[in-house]
Image (cartoon, rainbow, N blue to C red):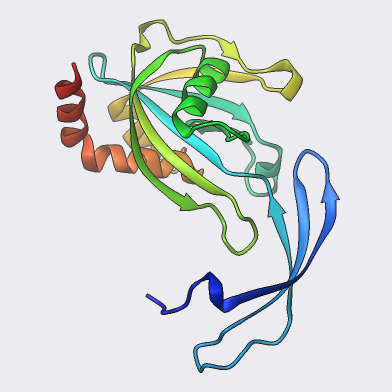
Length: 205
């Protein structure tokens, strides 16, 4: 771990480059270097899309996850199938709490009610290019009625609900069928911590 902190960074200029569905901001900054000197002036364009939550709903009775499938245009650059298997996720709006966003997005994207939310971790999605921090949760769900296509029309969402057996999701991970970070991290955490998670939910019952 470094001995540096945010006090060792000086932002000299902030300039809006683009503002649409997302934002791009150009920063100029200097920072302290490992040899004790100061860096030259560095210019970087940073993708500003806010921070987000992702939630993995699991039914411990049916041993099923509720996952979603939706089209992701940027995936076209690297795959022939840009309809991705994902966990439910959404942007944290100003004034919102993370658990509230999980509940809201579960209803909007999956038409499901979740409960017994457990915070897993948070991570920087791509710190070389964006400020986004993603907060991962798991939640309990009754998957028996999970089905259909959902999403918000004003956000051009066309989201299919997928009930996926625990063993099948594990196979999809091994085969690379699930290839986005939030879903991989959430599922891997679940398989590593399943016993402790179920014990925690049992204590809440």
